Image 1 (tube, rainbow, N blue to C red):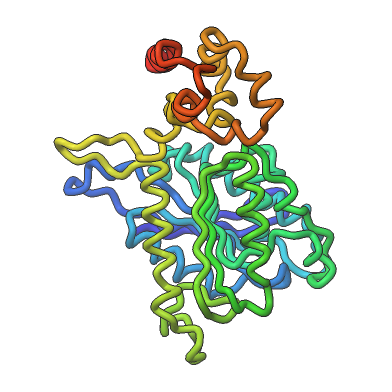
Image 2 (cartoon, one colour):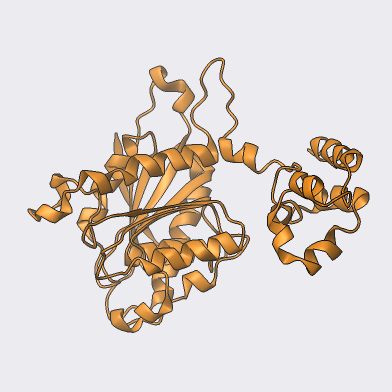
Length: 329
């Protein structure tokens, strides 16, 4: 394993890198996906429990990992923390070849306040990561005064440009209530962003990997049920990006197949693709008028509309639309 630390401009944030050594026995994994980890700590510190242990755990799942010690403290505004996150993402993309990572497979992983920073990077930042992993994250601006900061309302800034997101929390978190994760998930759903939300029955705030190794002696921090989030998040990222190539298998990620324009996709998702929208409007020009009159129809696939619209969209038109969509690059 290679380990080194870079100091980033403009605020001197420290980025620690955990990289696999190159090996002739792992040629198909010579370029890896990456996780950029933001530990929590209420913007007053960066928790060690959510830093290196998380990086090494993701390495065990095949990722090259990076931990950012971003600007914290009462004297540091939120804007400095966001600058640090943006600088870290820029560094990873600009140096992807040297770091042996795929510049388009970088997930921002954040916990608590670090989750807010990751969520902000995925919503208000000029450059966005390719996925978000948010653990018991702050997402609402009302937590700013409690941390002595004026922070971005990440849940209100979700847009169609926000990347696919994995969220986990516990239902009895009394520090950052689960409503934060629910609010962000609701915003993702409203914007047709693919996501997973895992709300575990019980567990204290700051549970990290939920193992005894990071529990610091606190019995409640070791919870195997909550600890399942790590495997689930790694599976989520493989579903979004695909895994390493294997002989005789389809390398297409499940999400790539789901997002391929088709008559089985929700109309709202389909019409956000300009090329797909042109195909639909060519054969079914009434689509915009119909969805404007009945907004709920936008959540249905065209195949369902054809089935229940009593001839408004006939089977022949549906076949023509389907054929046109299949020809799209």
